[in-house]
Image: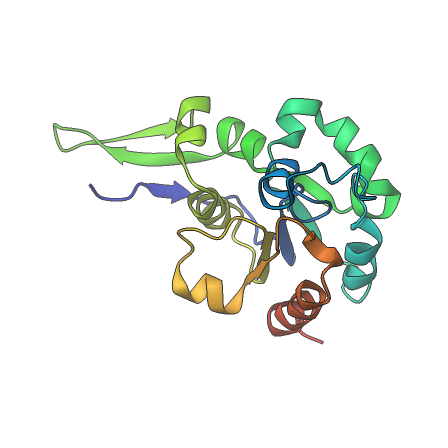
Length: 194
């Protein structure tokens, strides 16, 4: 089946970091419990503990924005997530993929009769996509010239994204890992410039 043509937003957006939360800004509770057989919270970790790390990393790029790829804005509400991110990072949040894709993005889809129809994405459409498809669809719509992905989900990323744009974090440590911090700086320099 031919991929749908995404109708882009009117303007090209500023540098964008597509950001997961669990497994990035704090341990993924399910991953941590599977690997370590105990709760990250009883091991001294706290929710959003990686916020200062991301805040410091983004300081060099004051125009960079954040698009949340996490399910937390859906589950807990965007306002609650923004509060946990703190004023500096919250001010950079330009939206979250679920809301953008299900309320703003349009696509042209071929019909059996050979014509095309313009459709949005339903909630069911969104939940059937993997993270790489979600990001690719958002990129096709928002058209950032420079973008990166920070996430702990490691499956189905195209090779060029995996090599050049993906900051893959360990779900047990997120951005607290020195390796993740080094990769974040490298990928940001490659994509956002000096």
